Each structure stands twice: as C-alpha cells, then as structure tokens.
Length: 75
Length: 75
Figure 1 (tube, each protein chain N blue to C red):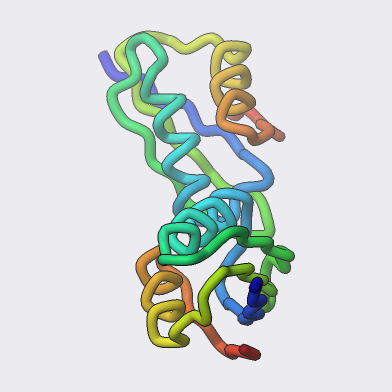
Figure 2 (tube, rainbow over the protein chains, first blue to last red):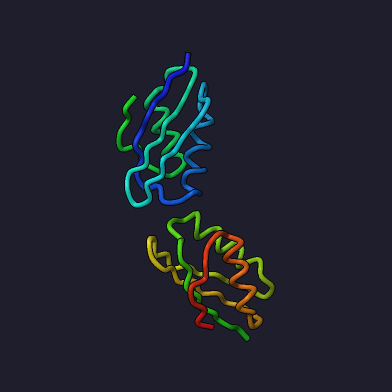
C-alpha cells in the first residue's frame, strides 16, 4: 500500500533547493517518490509517496538536514 | 598585479546559486578570488579578483555554465 504525506517547507528558492530536499527525503526508509511544487519566496509544497507510514520527526529532520524548515505537516 | 572585475548577475536566489557561480568562475585561468553579494530576487553583484585581465566573453560563458545570466559587466 502506498502513503502520501504532504508537507509545507519554507526557504526553498531554486532548483538546487529542490534537489537538496528531494535527496534527503528520498533517503528515508520506504520513500518511493518526492514531488516538490516550488514557490520561491514563499511556502513550497512537498508530496512524499512511501510504502511505509513516515514519522513526522524523521521528515522534519531530513528537511532540516537539507537546510530548510517544515512549517506544516499535513500527513 | 591584481585585477578586480565586477559583474551583475540575475537569477541567483540562494547559497547553492552562489556556490555554483563561484565554482565556475574560480575555474577560469588567473582567478584568485570570487566574492558574491547575493540579492535574492534581484541582481547579485559578483567581484572577481584575478592575476590576469579576464575576457568578458569567458566570464559570461562561465556564469551561463552555472545556469545564470550576466546582465552587466563593469570591468
């Protein structure tokens, strides 16, 4: 079964930011796909598809590792 | 003798952009230092210090290689 978790992330401004966040989230166990709707200068929406239910703390940590902040987790 | 070339670059929005541009310009022959004053959402100023006089075309090419556009060369 596939789960989709949608989070809001601040501070992402360009394709490099998208790559960094995608790379970190893809490294989480069970993650199959990461789709980012970039909103430079605002809040970007990140949809994470996974085979397992993801731990919100782990998601926040991965995003922080990339250098950004989760401002909402709509899991 | 040391030369300083100052250029204006559009489209740079974050630290990753600064790294990309710095890396490309540092690769040019004679370049000693690259200093970027980032203006996200506007025009960033890039100061290049070099031992040789730099060719404006080479600078533009290096910046384009990083994915950005030189909008003025105040050499």
